[in-house]
Image (cartoon, rainbow, N blue to C red; front, side, top):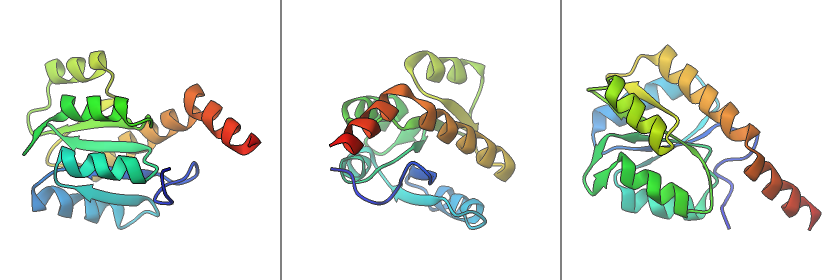
Length: 145
């Protein structure tokens, strides 16, 4: 059962990426918030976190050491959770954005990150996650018993 990393009232972000610049940039952006941020360097590490923690938003670099963002999307779909997936890419364009949305991702963020854009997109993804009927149904069943 997922643990206390995130809750319904806290933005919990799993950031998947292998570069230290990616992590430093996100740490700087998140330092001004009360959001929970956890890092994974690979899909393998992210899979373990998804099994152990509540995650509302996944921010995934386009390409990882052990796959691509679409592989992470498949992991999310099979995890029993339904966090929103945002793809981070230095070459974010309309084609990537369309592919991400058509396959079930939430959005694309261009790197290097613009702090206000990251905050806006992650906030909207979290709000979208909170409103999803499947998650709300699970929460009601858990509360009932």
